[in-house]
Length: 157
Image (cartoon, rainbow, N blue to C red; front, side, top):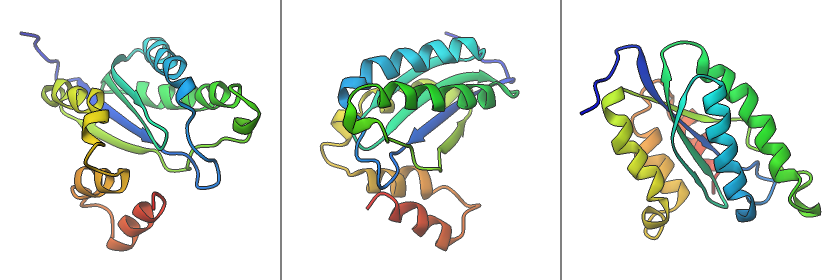
């Protein structure tokens, strides 16, 4: 059994397309998954799971409890946009929503959450992205006002 350092944490990122951007081309999924894993390694993190869907993308990392996640986000977002925009003429103006949903996890929850990320096809056979955000990510966000929660959910309707 793997022991966990108290200096480690799980970092889950959920990126969604901007309202005017259309969808994430599924033809970019393999390249985005490889990019996330490569960028994680360069940032000093371990990529635990990536799942790309047309309406959102999950990236789950195991990181040291320092600024490595900031380095990952600063590098990954522009490179992933570059990857998506190079797919075809219709994706040249693709952009992510300005908000990246970030969830920090204790190290003992990372493997469990990795299974959730990998099983997105099964999960979304019965749940929408709106339900996922509301029931899993926003429900526990005690630091958000009701107005802020509604604003986030309104971006995926």
